Length: 168
Image 1: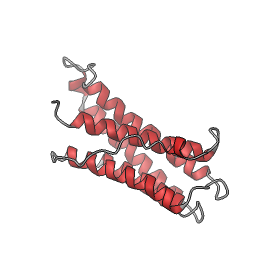
Image 2: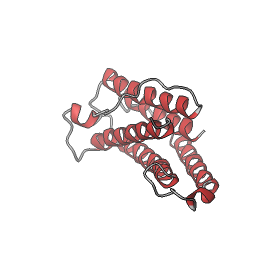
Image 3: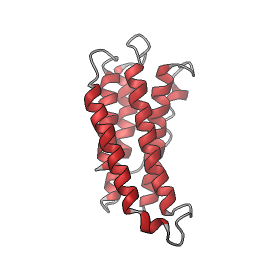
Image 4: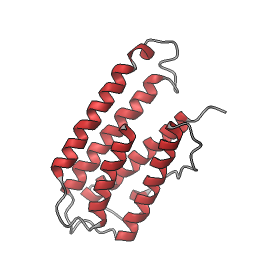
C-alpha cells in the first residue's frame, strides 16, 4: 500500500507536469496522500521494532537500510510535491513526450517493485533516469528540483527492488 501510494502521488505530479503545469493541482488531495504516507511509514517502523534489535539489523541489507529507503522515498516524494506545486508553466519547458519518457521509466520501476514485493519475478529495472543531465536545465531552477526528486525516487525504488530480490 505504501509503494502504491507513492506511485499514485508521483503519477499525480507527473500528470500535472505533462499538462505543462497548467490547470490546478489538487493540493488537498496531495496533502492527504502525504499524510497517509507518513502514517504508513510510521506503522512499518513500529512493526519493525523487534527486527531493529536483532543480529544483522545494521548490515547493508538489514532492517535499518530498508527503513532508511522507506524514509528516503517519503522524503523525495515530499520534495517532488513541493517542487511541482512551485513550478510555473513558463518554467516547465519539457514537452509532453519528454515527461512521458520520464513517467514510463518510473512506472516500469514501480511495477517491478510491486511484483517483487508480491513474490513474483519482476521485469528488468530501468536504471539511471538521468533526467537532470539529459536536459539542459539550470541547476538551481525549480524544474531541476522536480527532475532531481524524480531521479531520487527512481533510484530509491531501484534500490528497493534489488533489496527485495533474493541474493544470488
